[in-house]
Length: 165
Image (cartoon, rainbow, N blue to C red; front, side, top):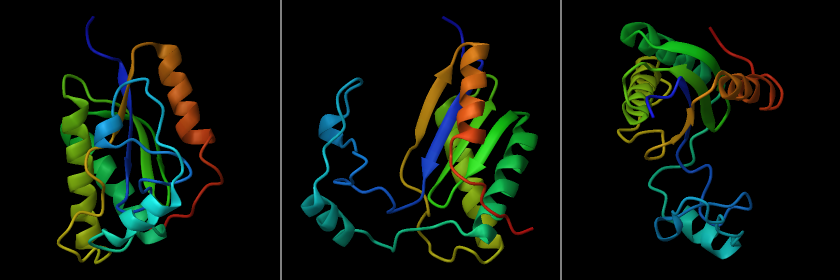
C-alpha cells in the first residue's frame, strides 16, 4: 500500500483530558478501533485527577512559542516538511510529511525537542515530561485528505492564540 503522503499528529499536555471527561476517552481495556469512547464519569475523572503526579500542564504564550520553535527546528534538522501547525493551551496539532520516518518516531522527536526548548527557556522545570504518553497520528493517503487536515488544523481550532517571541 506504500507510505502515506503526510500525517496529522496530535499530542496533549499532561493532565488536561482525564478518563471520565465529558469529551470521552479511551483506556487500555477499551482501545479497539471503531469502538465507542468511554462515557462521561465524574467519579472516575475525580479519581484520575487525584492520581496525577504533577498539576495539569497548560501552554501559555511563552510555552507555545518555545514549542513552535522546537517543532520548526525538528523539521529543519530531519528534513521533514511542516504543512500546518496549531499549538493550543493543552495540545498540539500538526500536519507533516516525515518521509520514511514513522509517525511514532516523529511524535517522540517533537515532544522531546519541545520539552528541551521549554526547559532552555525556563518554562518547564519538572523532571517529568509535560506531555502525555504517546499521541494521535492519522495517516493521510490523498491530497484531499492533506487539504482537509490542514484546514482542520488552521481553521477549526477556535480563535488564534497569541505567541511570545
